[in-house]
Image (tube, rainbow, N blue to C red; front, side):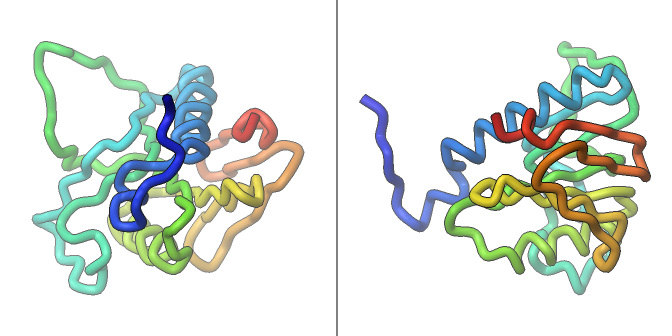
Length: 160
């Protein structure tokens, strides 16, 4: 039997059904572009960087989905925390998470040199593509376009 609820204290770290579903869809859609290497929940090493105004990251950033230029993966060797920053970081709003927390994370991602960030609002079936914190476009239907990375996806494919 599926457990349908979680306590508020651990719901954000466990992820919800919609959060997980959208995360899997995004990874699959981005991987099918065949241009990028796609990762979920990848730890980024930011401990060496001066991010005193990015307290929300607490020495580690872990986007829900991120992409890098196409790379080969050697499964016999692993990297615990990536020191190279991704091209794109995607955050998916979970049911109990304040939007402001993710906006602060996105601001920090840009300070880390990440080129583009997306914020997914599952309950509104909307994706906001940020070129920087003050320049963004929201997509609720049709084709989503990330001009910085030349990525075009159908919004419905992310949520269906």
